[in-house]
Image (cartoon, rainbow, N blue to C red):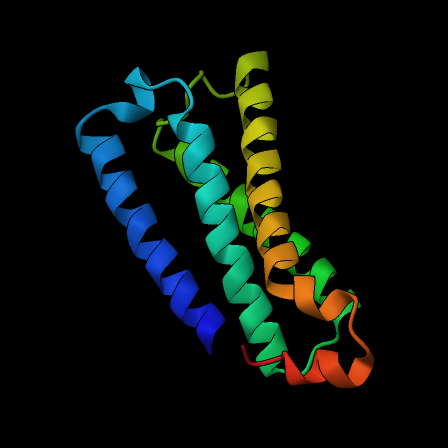
Length: 137
């Protein structure tokens, strides 16, 4: 249950940061802001997916694949949204656009990977009995 609370707090922080980034122009004026946002949202999504997969009784090895695939698909959906509404950093179809999209997807996955590691660092080196007791932290 704690992971859902952490994810909610991070989601609120990400929403506030996104609003500042949008309305104050930080996405354009601060070079690393887009990177920060993709890492933060990837982390948040990773926590939500780990928490949900634990609730469903999905084992650790399947969780990592579920986190990676789900965050990758959601990242692609976001990149398609950016392209459709012409808010991508470069014109769609150009090499800079594809490089930025690849960087964004990498940052989404890296954030999710850190979330997976953070949520499971206790249970990775524990026995199966102890790992099971950490499921609902």
